[in-house]
Image 1 (cartoon, one colour):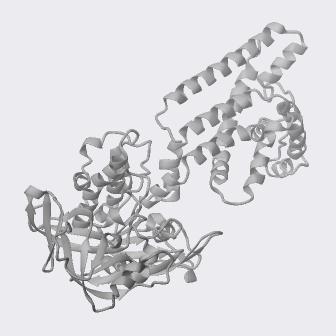
Image 2 (cartoon, one colour):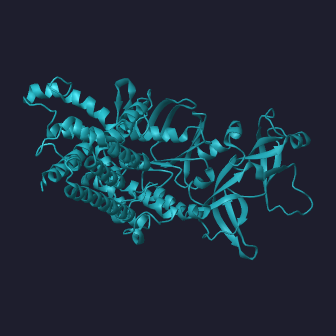
Image 3 (cartoon, rainbow over the protein chains, first blue to last red):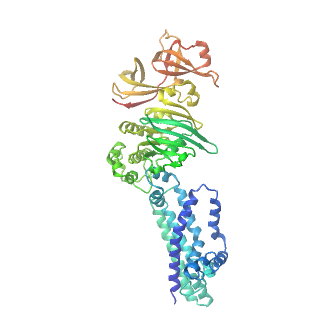
Length: 222
Length: 366
């Protein structure tokens, strides 16, 4: 039994969530507070991965990440290595793929707490950054929890995009969902059962913990 | 002396604010206007929460905004305290940490007021370790005021801090505001649509209509101006008299108050003789008689008066406002029919009968 896909999957999901929080937070913040008309356009783009077939996203990513692509090209000339069929390429792909699952809960949380607490914080000598850290973030803690869990879980379950841009390289880009596919193809049902059952239980347990914990969080902002 | 000199021009789709204002550096300046008059926007411009594209504002010697130089001091750099309509206490912090939020963020050498002093002033001791959720509106607003005070502001801005409270809670907060005004030497700008609630606090009144300043001045002067009666509205038009408690008639449950050499009876107040008291005499509660009635009647408060000025009669409705001198200027609203019947002219000697006295509150006991 080869456990490497599990390890790669967890690594991929954890890395992706970290990247998503870094990029998703300012985007969600901007969406929640901007009066700009560009907002609806950005919202629509952010939501695209929800409706697009993963193969469409994967196809464009494959082109973009390739040695002649808009991302892969510059990357290769700087680092000397390609992005397609690498772990880094997978992180980029997963980040895009799971983007709405992180941005939307964060945006919702920022919108729910609104501007009024921020204004109060500013009037109490807190700079914008300070108010974000000391007031907006703790008030959005439920949003962050939901974002982390959904982003993580959604990355675990990704299949089509990974297959398109990551290929299926054992030890490098072979994640659990693809390993399951391989096992089924090879009629190795016991192994497929093990991975599938494991993923099912893990996902259920995480969601259970989140929902239970969410209820007990002290902050209620309506 | 003016503490604040400001000029703001804000233009929204359905609303515009266009005012030039100077605020005194002491006492309570009340900005009064109906909803939509721009009073909250004006306050937010003063705070820096709103940036007027052609604004200019000076606080004392320091310029906070000068758009010709593209200068705009952000909110958190202004030495202000702000109290909003809703208390806006941070729900994730205890009352103590809410109070400490601004206090921690100013340099210790800039702290002019001690934590314990504010806690005493606003009576917050029993609440310190609780969370804002579950506290009454009045308690929350007291904490919000305390939180603002702990930043040692040089200017306190209040945006209808009582309007979300029921009448009883208002009465709970008012003594704290009066204490605040007396004990802290800091200018307060107070926005409201209800003059009754600030009668005891108000020193200067700014009347705002459709984004423009209609009048500024000492409260009594502005309220008894005939030309403003229409703007201020019948529930406000009248006069503010500052009186002294002269005695009580316990068997009738009445208190006798004095201003200059005149006396008025009001419902009994639990105040010591010599206490100062502000009364609001609404114009619609004052009527005029040509002479003192020969036959006994039930009117208690009958004041000799001189007609000073007769208001415009071309306004809609059946009434007209008359300005009288009863030692202080007061207004009376009578019908145009009565005006014709009594043939009132400026200089005539008449009697003003006071049918009711509004808003009797203790202001201070000296």
